[in-house]
Picture 1 (cartoon, protein in one colour):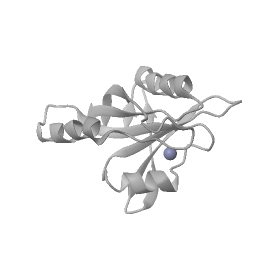
Picture 2 (cartoon, rainbow, N blue to C red):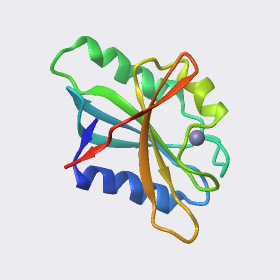
Picture 3 (cartoon, protein in one colour):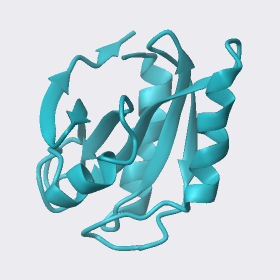
Length: 133
Ligand SMILES: [Zn+2]
């Protein structure tokens, strides 16, 4: 997807603020272009995993019926103890959200945060381009 630097900064700032716990949230937009970032609460409040209240995600999915509405482009979360690459837990979670990108922010202890995006389909992980504008 394409995302403005200021929006990606919001995601990274959220990841840094919640470290060492993982953070999570969603990126909304149209036509593969991000228009908004919404922070969600990590119900697991854990450095190793995240959990989202499905009731917060479902209205975003239903909004997709309306062509003008912002769509759910990506679910984001952070990795504070490992590289920003989908874990098996992420792959399992992703099975419920086909076509939604997985934006992961790595927050290493002694290095700058960095972000990667993936599509996870049928258990297969594919890198997708994150175009920062
Ligand atoms: Zn993860």
